[in-house]
Image 1 (cartoon, one colour):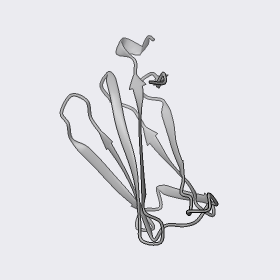
Image 2: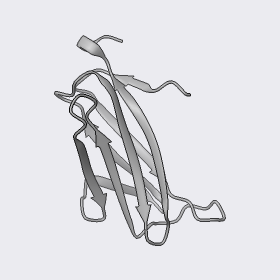
Image 3: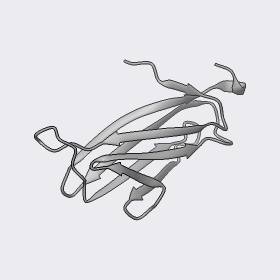
Length: 103
C-alpha cells in the first residue's frame, strides 16, 4: 500500500483523475462523479461533472476537484472517482488530515 498524502485542516487538496479508453488514451466520460467520505461520521459528499463546475476538465479525459479541508477532522478521507457512459471506470484513493495541525 502506498503512503497517502498528508495535509493540515484548512489546506486546499487537489484530487485528480484521468479517464482512459481501452487503447489507453484519454477520453471523456459521459458523466463523472467524485465522492469523499468523512472518516468520523461516514457521511459521503458527492459532486459531478458536467453538472457541477467545481469538477474542472483540464483537457480530454483529465479532471480535478479542489477540496477545501477547512474544518475537516483528522483521519483518512477516502475518495472515489466514478466515470459512466462513454467511459466506465472507477478509481479510489485517500488523503490524511493530520491531528492538531501536525504530521
